[in-house]
Image 1 (tube, one colour):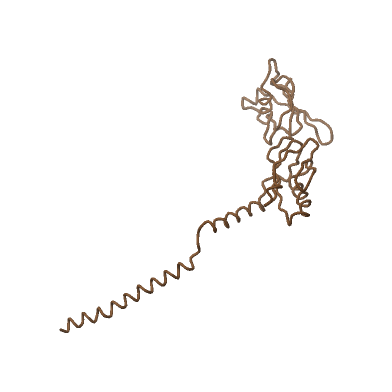
Image 2: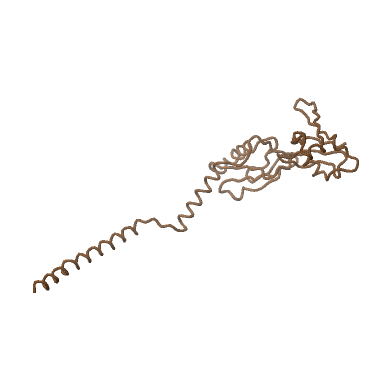
Length: 224
C-alpha cells in the first residue's frame, strides 16, 4: 500500500514539473523568433547598395598621371544619374559633350581633373554629384613604324609595347630589311631627338634583351 501511494505521489509531482518545463521552453523559443533578424531580399538589397556606394566613392581605377588625348574612349559615370552617365570618345578637337554640362575640353587633362570639372558644372543641377571618369580605351598614344615592313604606318600602343611588338604590328619584315640595324627616333622635351638602336637578330636569340626597347608615345621605329 505504501509502495502504491509513493508511486502515485511521484507521478503527481513529476508530471506538472515536466509540463511546466515544456511550457517554458516554448515561450523562450517564441521570444527568440521575435527578436531574430529577418534574412531575405530586403536585407540583401541594403547590403548590395552598401557595396555599390563603396565602389563608387573609393578606389577609382584610373592613373592620375595619365593625360587624356584625342580618340581616347572615356566612361563617365555620375552616381545615380543614368541619363547623364555614358561612354564618350574624345573628338579630334579634344572635346566631349555631356547632358547638362555641354561641351567640355577633355584632352590635356587627367581623369581626376576632368572629374572635378564635370562635378563643378553639374553642381548647379545636382546636389553633391559623384563623378567617375575612367579611360576605357587608350587610342591617343601612338607610335610610327617606317621602312621595310609589310605595313608601315601609325599604330595605337599600350604601356608595354616594345620594338618587337612594333615589328609584329607592322606585319613583319620585307625582303632585304636590315634586322640588325633597327633604330628608334625619340623626341625629347627640349625638342632634340635621341636615336636608340636595336639588333633584332640578337634580341630574338635572347641576347641583349635591353635592346627590345619599350616604346613611348610619339616614337618612330625605323627598319632600314
